[in-house]
Length: 569
Ligand code: GLC
Image 1 (spheres, rainbow, N blue to C red):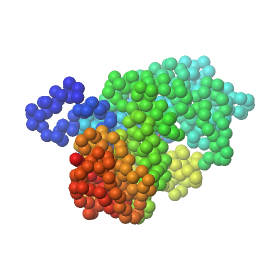
Image 2: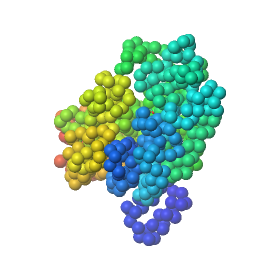
Image 3: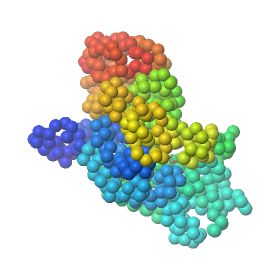
Image 4: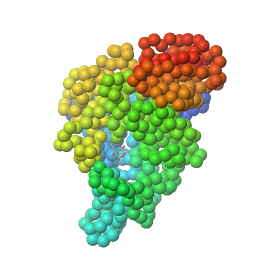
């Protein structure tokens, strides 16, 4: 514990302050010497959809501020706010037109400062989304860049001559469909955009770009931000020779040839920038969270840096590629992350991924499965990042007609890819119209399920998904084995039950998750894990008949049942 924290704690105790008040202090390092982000529960907020304070149908910063009390009660330690900067909204904020301001649709910089201040008061840190690979085509840097080949900022983006008349510089494809190159007749050159046409890639080989972007990070640190989620961080650099990517068999959802992004994805130069970003983050006790779409564990490992000097929290998005509720598949993926040597980061959905409630639900036991998923990623060794509404069992609400699609990805990918609107619908606050999100017409419709899955109702219901999340988070915050204990898989061959111990020297927590629709019994040999004659005390369970027992050997798990218990000698 650092000196400042010791003084704060001593003062608090001498004043007789209680534990909840202590929680509002922002600890930088805990008693065991862990940095704050290792023990924090993060929560992603998609600002368009969280809470609408002015009833224009779009969420805003004042809306978020008004909901901080809820987030504090839930036990959230840090919120990551998806982009709320000035933007033409071609990709709903991931096309930034000014990195150092707030879009009027979300409020003002003063509203942001107030949000950061109120959040701090409640012990909640604020993480901003840093869209560093590309800007909006309406950013003044790009407007200058495209004005002439000799403009001051021309080289701030990736420009090249075509291969010939009407032919782009190479075969690279945009992940939104079509060529990644767009021709600008005024200067007879093409610019590169991995994403939408309106999202030109910045040229990170230009030191002026690097300087400008580092300046952006300092700006937000000075506004009280505790870190950044690094958007599309795999893609900062491109091959200087712009070699063609290898073409693979078949076509993708846009009808383009499949391609291996060999020359424009995860270039080694990325790591140089990441190390520098980390140096600056460390000065502010800040965290870097990576949007790291890795193919295998070695790629993920690289993001931690050779001396743990790059991204502290590279998200294991491979975890979200576990398509079915399968104990074997999750066990395998957990083992991979554990083998990386880095501190794992668990995510089960976000604004780009179909909600976990919809992905894993079987149509009959969805609520039990939502609790099961929560019990898994909130008890594993690592940092969990929740997605707003996951704690309510929010489901995807996909558009059914192409004309209703808002997401550019859905517009170009329809009907194979319906886009991401479904996972971005308004937060479900109560059972009233528009789920209490707005008195205006929400930018996306709320699903009928919001009458049942909403904060107000679930808060009052003791066995709701929300209450289960709250209990789990509380357990996590106060249980040393869950915070820091090793991960020890049990029953490695069981295809139905995912079971593990989180173990410290003196105690452990047993987690057993039945990922099947049948009753299962497992034999728990705690003696072989160093706990002979173990005392087992139930901490949290979805099972009606969960009893605390000594000499515990057999455990019966109900369909999709969760059993979490303290194990002591
Ligand atoms: C990231 C964001 C996604 C966005 C893309 C382009 O993948 O998560 O929503 O479309 O970057 O900025």
